[in-house]
Length: 534
Image (cartoon, rainbow, N blue to C red; front, side, top):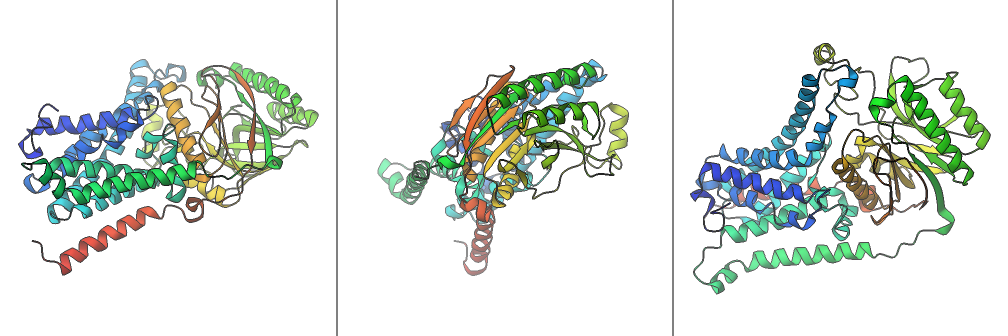
C-alpha cells in the first residue's frame, strides 16, 4: 500500500501487488455484517481494478493471482465463523480431527469463492489487453463478468457472501434496486463505480488539473450520473407509497428454543426440545396467534405416524386448534423410509399435515455427501456423520391455513432464486427457519442481512426464526421491525402483512446478467471485426 498513490501497477514489485489486492479484499470484507461499514464497498475494489488496468504491461498469469489474493482476504475474513464447527468431540471425533474438519471447511469454501475472483481478474486482463483503448468496454465487461461468476456460483451447491451483501442491511436505498433484477443490480453498480474510480486513478498522470478534468470529463459525467440516477431510483422505490392492507394482517408466533445441537441430538435433548417447544406453543396459542413457527430441526426426530413425539404434538395441536409449523425430518414419501428431507410441516387443528416444504439447497458434507458414489466411502471412513438427507424439489408451494408462504430453511437464504420462484407462484410472505448453532453472532448478522435482501427484492414481509438467534421480523422495505437476542429462549408474536405485488425481479428473474454478458460479447466482437485498433 505504501507506493499505491505515487506509482503505477507496473512499478510495484510482485509482493506489493499481492498485498494491495489482499488489502482491497480485506477492506471489502469490513463492509459485510457484522462490521457493516457498507460505504467502504464503493471504493474498496478500486485497487483490484487498478491492478487489472495494467494488463498490457504485465504477464497474464499474474492477473488470477491478484484475484486469488483478493478472494482469500475477502472470503477468508467473512467466513471465518465456519471454524466454530470445532469442537466436534461430542460426535466422537478426536480434537485434532475436529480442528482439521473445521479448518478444512473454512479453507475449501474460501478457496471456492477466491477462484471465481481469480477468473474475474483474468477476464479483466483479457479485456484490457485486447481492447486497450475502450474504457467503457472495460467497465461493462468487468460488471458482466462479476455478475456472471456470482450467478454461476449461486447455481452451485455452495455459495455465501455475495458482493451485494455488503450493502445489507444498512443501505436500504440501494438495496431497493434489487427489485429490478435481484442482487445482480447491486453487484453491477458496485463494480462499475469502483471501476470508474480505478480508471480515473490509473490515468491521473497529467501535468495540470485542467487537463486532467478535460481528459476524464466523460468518465466523471458517467460516474456521477450513474450514482445520482441509481440513488434517486432507489430512494423513489424506498419511499414508494404501496400501503399494506389492514385486512391482510397475519399474526404469527415464533419460538427460539436455544438448544445447542450437541445437546439436541441426544435422547435428553429430544425430550428437552419437546418440552420447550410444547410449552412455547401453548403460550403463543393462548395469545391467539394464527400459527406458530419453529426453527429448522426444532424436534430432531423423524416424523412418523404413531411415534411418541408425533402423537404428543398432534394431540397438542388438536387440543388448541392453532396450526403448528414444525421444523423436523420427514420421509420423502410414504413407503420410502430410507430417504428423508429437512422439512417444515404445517400440522393443522385436525392433527394432519396440511402444508409441507422440503429443503432444496442442502449443505454439502453437512447434510449430504457430494459425489457419494466414491467420495462417500472415503468420508464415511473418516467421520461418523450420516449422509441420508435428500433435497426437495424446486418450485414448491407451501400452502397453509394462513396463506401461501415462501420458505427458506437455513442456508437457503443465500439463494434468491428459490424465494423468487415461490413468490412468483403466489407466496404472500416469507418465513425462514434456521438453526445457526454453533455459529457466532457474526454469522447470524450475515444471515439476517441475506433475509433483508430477500424481503426487499420480493416486496414481502419476512419472519425469521432460529434456534440460537437472530430471530427477526423484517418488513417489505427492509426495516427490521423486531430482532430477538442471541443465545436466549425467545417467544414472540409477530404481526405482518400478506402482499400480492410482483416486482420486476419476481416476474422476470435476473435478466441483467445475461444482458450485460451479451452486450459485452457483441461490443467486443464488433470492435475486432469492424474497427481497426488505433
